[in-house]
Structures are given as C-alpha cells and as structure tokens.
Amino acid sequence: MDSTSLDRLVQIGSLKREPGDQLEFDGLLRSGQARLTDAQLPALSIESRFDLAYNASHAFALAALRHGGYRSENRYLVFQCLPHTLGLGDNVWRVLALCHDRRNRAEYGGDADIDDQLITDLITAAECVLEKLTNLGAVPSTDT
Image (cartoon, rainbow, N blue to C red):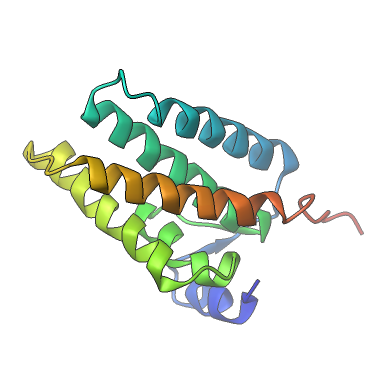
C-alpha cells in the first residue's frame, strides 16, 4: 500500500483516516462477491448485470481503502486509489472509472450506453480487484 499518496489525499480533505474494521471489510467482500456472481448470470437484463458488477467493484475498492485505514465519501475516488491500495494498474481503474461515468449517465440521465463488452470488461476488472483484495489478509489491528 502506498500510504504516502493516500496521506496526501487526507491532507487535502479527499480522504479521511479511520481505523479499519474487520467486520466491515468482511461484509464488503461478501457483498461484492455475491453481486459479482449474480452479474455473470446471462438470464438477467444487461442493466441489472451492469449494476451488480459495478456495485461489486465499488465494494471491493472500498474494502481495499478501508483495509488500509482510509475512508472516502466519493465513489469515483475509491477507484482512483486502486493503484495505491492494491497496486493495480491504470488499465483496471480506468475501466472502473468509465463504468462509473456510465452508471451516472444511466442514474441521472437515463442514458445507459451499456453493451456486453463493457460488462465483460467490468467483470474482468472486478475480478482483478478481488484477487488482490483476497491476498491482503486480516485488517491490521489498531490495538496498542
């Protein structure tokens, strides 16, 4: 984890420092895994699959941030922090950023612009985040 870059975001007010919590981390992981599994069900509508995969990705990215003792109220920022929380490359967070934009267009403007390739890319990105996330181990204890 690149805490120097994340601490700079704390200094400017984009992130908050908050001790990690194993129960919260486990809940985010469990929620993301269930949604990612359901996102791969071809019987669901393309919009439902997109929502499920997007929310799985967000849960995983937030879990990574929380594991390191940070919190963000900004959905987009949790994706941008992935190079610092999990060491993932731009290729992953850029897919998630694109999907965030598409999600916002669908939610606030009714223009989904979602296709099967986007869902495939989103699921692949979510799986990359999940793989790195499951290798983090337990949330560091704040007990002294």
